[in-house]
Length: 537
Image (cartoon, rainbow, N blue to C red; front, side, top):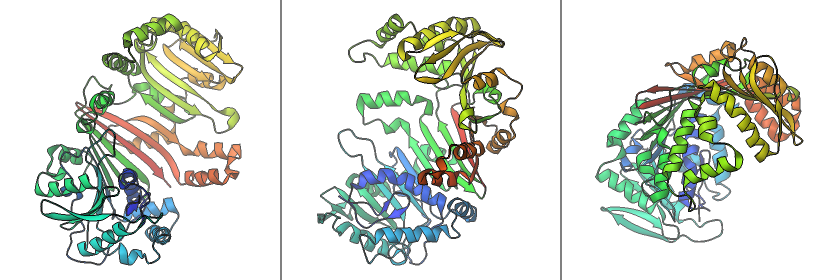
């Protein structure tokens, strides 16, 4: 078994020790990473269109398509220089490719074997998911010189693997187009017009069919998804969820139901400039009942200002209720009705998640703070739809935790608390406080300082300058749902002394290049939009 020519983080190989399908599943991330990190020049050659659309050779029914722009521009190159610390990140990547490839092919030269035919874009596609076998996947690359691409790919296909096993290469024909397949693993390569295609036999046939019939580039669903995140991106991801699980039977139906909040189609575009990495996403055809509003409401900005990590979920109770309903609709589970399982849970443990969480819990915000180990803390803050129901649920939640986690609870009596308990255990060095506050918020605070900061509302995250700057970078009316400030994390790593470890030191070095991370969402009818921005310095 062997590797495909493209693998990992943009590395080229000529030996192939693993199944091409298995490797290509990893290649999607590799293509995007390579495009985001560097600009790969593709010069020389003639007769091809290096800027051709890879989607033109992908079947319209393909449920997954991942594309990378290998020549993203000067802004991305400057970003790559900052992140890699290399003056010429593209050259560094090429040298790494040559070094790795020559372990298996002493004659390999990037300038001779890759550069003459490498085009502007590359795309991975999945024909469909299958049970009981490999799913057909392929990789399409427009070429600058189709003859050079054919020469390299065929030579790679015919080369023996590291174990000395010789490939069983045969020529096949589909719709008058000839291509090569190694029958030992049913993987092959084809030159179709000015495109190089490699993958499973089914994927190669699919690419040939796309040229002769309807391709993904002609699909109205794909066109909408592409335009929803703008077309000129470093990387692009398209997932047609309504088709992805269609071949998996009942399991596919269950998975589709679980992912109903993502709508019919999901698209994401990766881009960047000298100061930030940006990812835009869109979910099309979202059921209005499947997910809540676009952001976590006011609770997110009211988390403690010292938080260096925060996340928010809109209408957590409503989403939990819908998840429970989906669970019960799946029918019998292990020979027992799901409704009976929930009833048994209440009988044995005294808790009903529908009554004791879903019925009253509103928007939820999670937080972590502390730039020294001794000062670490965190917890959650939630709005409540029914304070009386929350007040009744707290003792039941405490009893439940006593039974399943072997903790002890005692009443929490202090200013600002309406009803609460403190949970402790011998194996739990930190106290956990759970309470309904006087201003009708439900809180869970890990450590006493976390309780203090959670009860205090005069110093909220919304006034933190790093948070305000990050939230402003989202633009477009998007409301923050996730936030990380890397400065306190750097201080925390330094305070632990963990930076003396070689691996941690590498992570610490990477943290030096980042400022903040923020993600936000927005609902527009049946469309859910999202954006993630990572600041780079």
